[in-house]
Image (cartoon, rainbow, N blue to C red; front, side, top):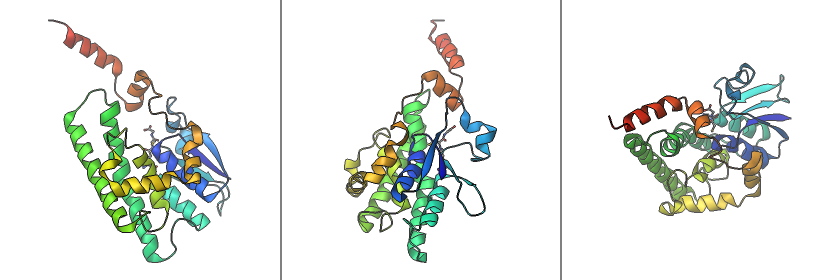
Length: 239
Ligand SMILES: N[C@@H](CCC(=O)N[C@@H](CS)C(=O)NCC(=O)O)C(=O)O
């Protein structure tokens, strides 16, 4: 049995999709961000970075194995099952390159783009332009790659597709339309039709981006909403 420490977010879905695709037995363990559970001592023993997703494989050789970082989890599950990661050196390298690209580029940049577009307490044009330009560049990179490889990022359906898909799924919230990237649009529709992928996305109650109140967001993102409001009301006073 595998415990999946989870919350319905793009990084969480990468792993729930892989678990559904492989048919491995797993148990969902929700992590309550509003209560700050991700920072508890017990959770940090599983995920030292205090983020979801994480897994514990209770059937690993040598005893229960905690794993954090979604890319590392995908590679572990692919190796455990012998699926979605080619065994030849070139094919394996191609998939891992795109998993790394997602982990170091698409995910973090889309995260920052979404933050400055949707959640930042003030609109900062410099940040919105910087991350907006970078996310458009990354969409173009993926679109170009899919123009070369066809239906899958690294040739055949793999953990590279599962890593990228949930971050492209949030394109509307990112202020993007797939109409500008025909290869990406085709890939997205093909993957969207996969039943295991759909099951992975429906785990944990679907996508509720705005379930946090303004106060919760202020606490979560570490800014003092109360002080800002006081400053704002001072600014708004006529003098
Ligand atoms: N590089 C990490 C990123 C994980 C991550 O940022 N997870 C977010 C949810 S998508 C999280 O746990 N946020 C909680 C917080 O910021 O306190 C991975 O891919 O696993």
